[in-house]
Length: 404
Image 1 (spheres, rainbow, N blue to C red):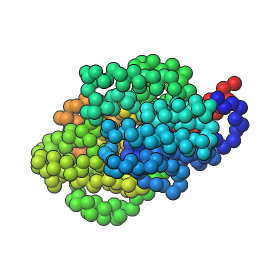
Image 2 (cartoon, rainbow, N blue to C red):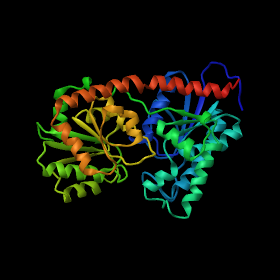
Image 3 (tube, one colour):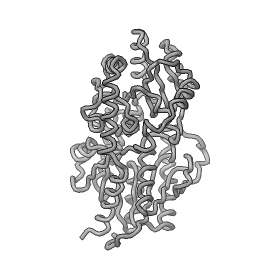
Image 4 (cartoon, rainbow, N blue to C red):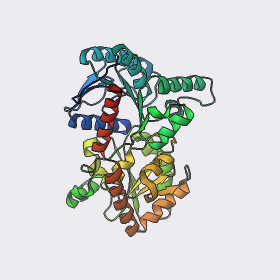
């Protein structure tokens, strides 16, 4: 392993087993980590799948396309085995070209590929853990927890987490507990590094009210209606059916609310679901919102919602809500509590009626909405700063490179 690297610019090879860049979830973490490392003077190259959006300020190195599957779905897929084989080959090529000081593997496939490459190149591996692989596959209905394959994959996940990295970054304190308690990862390897907020881009005071009024009218939202906003993936495990059920309950009670649902995939599916529930005039689906436009759209919201039910994954979307000083109604999970603390409005996981009640309470209490929103923005500014997170990442890198 490399040792005695002086206090100088580091060369970091990130392995991202996804179609980077897309405008959701873990992609935002990869983007913001890369940006802050570059600001701190380090060189970062990202190896990723052949699809995704190029960003001019980033060094993105892609695999060649698969000849038999040009388009593929977000999330778990049997085709990912082939994608990851291509990614492993491309990572080896780029590792030999780039000659990194550190390999930074995102998600379990990135850690597995990075673990092999790190040993070949004799450099440390940092694993960026964003949630349990097997739990995510169960959430996506790609794996049966009671099936024969689950114990095998769980053991593989345990091996990747325990044996390959010299340090593990976790996107939440809850994830750190999971690694220690369920996967027996030694505590000295675990470094909680929660997702952070861009409080300058997501600043409620930077948006022109006239422009915002124009945008809401373009989206077909009537003047005077309070907006309940969601921005993220549209999937069942993210709680979108529950969000629509809550909207239906509030609509039937004649509450003054319009639901702005931003994200993808499966927009047509959820639009049809909303129409079947009598919500065609109450819910607006925007489809994919580019990250560069996310703050402008999300700033329309009076209340933000987080109906995600996963107990293992991070929930970085909360940071954008918080930075925009929006009160948040969320299911009561450890990750949501970690970010929102006592300033969230919580409902028991899966309790749609309680979730709707949380929204209803805020609809009728503008003073509380304002107070909670400002408390959450202050919390984002104080506790979830990307510059501080970047310094922490670099400090971990340097400890691995200079263990004495």
